[in-house]
Image (cartoon, rainbow, N blue to C red; front, top):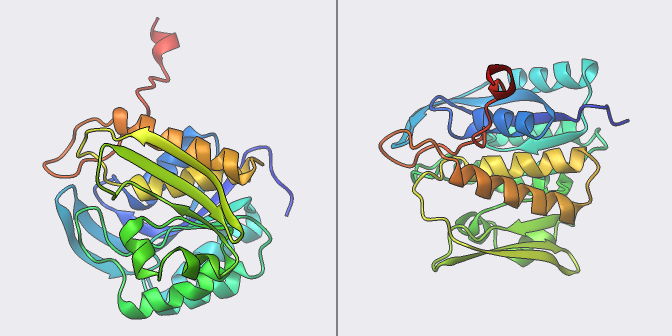
Length: 259
């Protein structure tokens, strides 16, 4: 599929009513990085910075209808998969994505930043098909362990970003691996903040946007890590728990007009 002047990113993920993660974080990320965000909502959640209060999965047929509407008219240059909703949806999404020839970033969402579980065992088992289709999989450390570790993920033939945000210590190491070994790594001092809600969604969408723009995977990885770190520093300090990041990066689009 040919690449449009504006990168078209299809986001298959759940909605976050608090605006910190999920498709809300995805849309803000893609927009800030110059892409056009389209969505196929897999679940509606009632959540805020303190946790997830309710989850309502969207019927699988409706998820697929959203995907087909976007692809058939607007087209797509990259896909980002987040919260998938159910095992049935995971398999149906895989059936559709098998027909596309674009980069696919799979963020295997299992647990929210607050600790609430967002995927059951059957859904996690269905992740196998999505990993086989993915260009790159982006789990945090607990998710990586639940998937069987680095070797188990890389056995599907995809790239892997082993994110270090859940590790201990003052330094974070994010590693980019291929089935043949480590390609790249970034080490940085941990940013002292509780405003980390949506970091995984933001990273995966930034990575998808970079790939859609034609960056190689290492350059897209580095751009995504940088975007997340700036968004953490720019967090507005909202809510009583794990607050949302600052996706606007402190930019005032009307500053020039107001000056």
